[in-house]
Length: 252
Image (cartoon, rainbow, N blue to C red; front, top):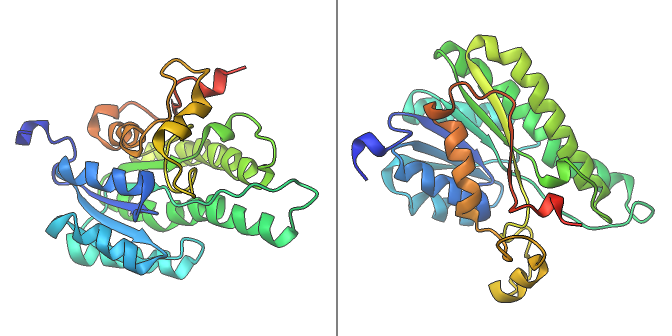
């Protein structure tokens, strides 16, 4: 890849939930395209290893995304190490299946806190630094479940619909200040969150026999949509909801 082909050269990105899955794939892809990456995650060992594997253009910050004070620490670390923030990828999230009548108030609230409130806190903490720097791009990772319902995932679905709505409002409030806000809606991506038991790819793919490619997507395939929205190539994109799902949402 030539310098001219590096789509994020000179930019600094904060990527939450960057220790594995689509977050780790996004961090690797961003660095390969010239970005400096602040990789955050609540699991220190895995996050540190992920950042170290990316070399000198990446740093790890242990980060509970539901803690407002820790968001300020992430911003401080990014500015101290790289001097600026151009991109925020709100990727961290959790998925749990539980019927609504069996879900406790505490678990429902916790899923919303990690999947939705963290997105709000990230925007609130990082957008002012982008504005001071002349602009930037915020990419919120929602889900196809932010566009439909999934049986047994009420809290997750509610949180991802919330991310979708919050993205629209943030785009309206921040766009005129130079900060673009968009959302990516993955579906059928084979990651540790969606495949926690590590089922073999062939078995996992069998779930998706009714869609065109008849397989699940990879973290890297999901990350490419985020790369586009983070880059200057999407300079006139604000609020588009990019689906990375091979038509899962249209499956009958």
